[in-house]
Image 1 (cartoon, rainbow, N blue to C red):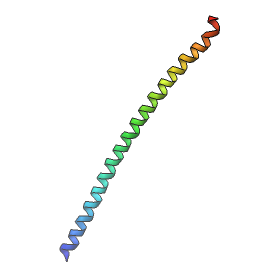
Image 2 (cartoon, rainbow, N blue to C red):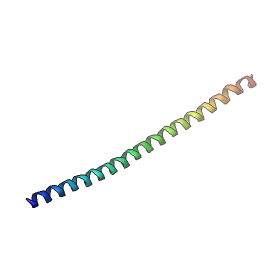
Image 3 (cartoon, rainbow, N blue to C red):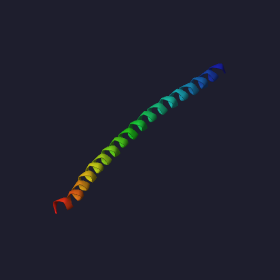
Length: 66
């Protein structure tokens, strides 16, 4: 009977350790995915900002040319 109790205690410890490692791995993966998405969005916004600046300069310099 003690062997069965020890077996179940060891199984519970193994499940807890496995769940902890799975949580750490998922957390690292989601942090990396969020970091990558943030990098992509920042690049997109930077390109939009540059294009907006170019367009605004063209629109502002248009009356000066005429």
